[in-house]
Figure 1 (cartoon, rainbow, N blue to C red):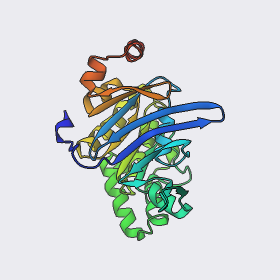
Figure 2 (figure 1 turned 135 degrees about the horizontal axis):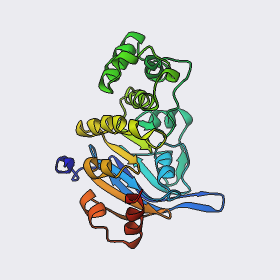
Figure 3 (figure 1 turned 90 degrees about the vertical axis):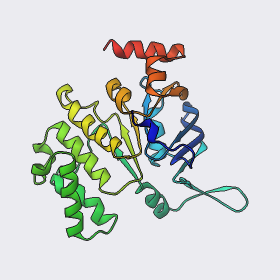
Figure 4 (figure 1 turned 30 degrees about the horizontal axis):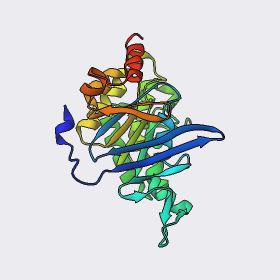
Length: 265
C-alpha cells in the first residue's frame, strides 16, 4: 500500500469546505468537505447521481460553486478574497491559469479527431503553455512511451482503440505538468478487455506520486491503488477511510448496500 508515504502534516493540495452545488432547484452537492494531500490517490465511489462528477467539475472550474469554497495548492479557486473579506470572481485569464494546473481525463476521450496522437499531446503545450514546438514534441514522445504507445504517435484517434485513445488523453493531460489529476470514470466507456491497460497506466502514475482524484466503479483499482476511498451518496460524503476500512469493513448501511450491488455486477 502506498499510503505510508503520504505526508498529512503539511497543507493539503485540495481542500473543499462545505461545498454546495445546485442546478436550478436540484441540489446535487449538499455540503462536501474533503482534503487531498500531495501524492495521495483518492477514489470517489457512489451511485450515479451522488455528485461525484459534479465535484470534480467544480475543482476544475467547469461548473461554479453555489456555496462553500475549494482551494487548490493554497489558492482559492474561482474567487479572490478582497481585503474586506468579500469574494470577487477571478478574471478569465486567472481562471485559465488555475485550471492549467489541473489535468482532467473524462469518460469520453475528447481528443481532436483531425489531429494525430502526437499533435493532440503537443497542442496544449504549444498553444497554452507557449512551449517551443521541438520541446513539446519531445515531451509528447516521452509521454507516449510512458503510456505504452510510442509506436502510435502518427495515428489519428479513429485508428486507435478506445483504450489507446484514453491513454493518449491521459498523456495529453500530463503534458501540462499538472499538480493534480482528475479522472472521471476513465474506463466506463471502454470495452471490458481494454479497461486493464488504462488502469495500469493510472496505477503507474500513482506509484510515481501523482496526486489523483478518481471517480470509478473499478473496485480492484480502489482496493489496490487508492490511499483513501470516499463514498458519496445523495450529495454528501457518507464515509471515508483507507480501502480496507471502507471496502473491507464499511460502517454505514448505504455504503454496505452500494458495495453489495457493485460486487454482484
